[in-house]
Length: 164
Image (cartoon, rainbow, N blue to C red):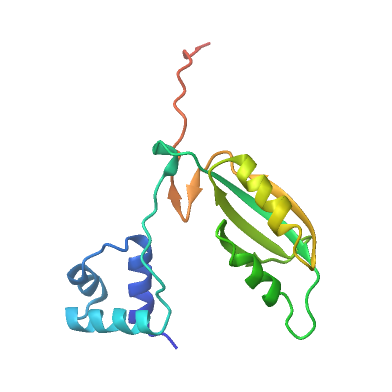
């Protein structure tokens, strides 16, 4: 069971993983030693998995494409969806896999250099897996907000204003 301090630290680190330990301690009202010990405990227990940087790849001169793939599968006796999800998340193109409620079973987020590369992944690797019944691929065209961060602000309206 996580303490209030643990939750406060997690919220701070989720907002900015580069927050210095002295700032975390001050915001939580504890000593730097207590904050550092709490962070170490959260890391060792697997609550904190890593500290990623959020990058707006649209501002980098690099080809990349992302797609969300809806996957319908046949769950396995005594194992449910876990075995097929594990097979899927082991592909290098896959960055996330989620078990979903609704019309499909798994949501798979994939990344690649080109649309063709991702299309080949779906047709040659994903859809050919045993127990995969169907897929529906949705390519990401533009990101507006990711993990609570606005990456594409409001568009500038350059039209002339018309007054009555």
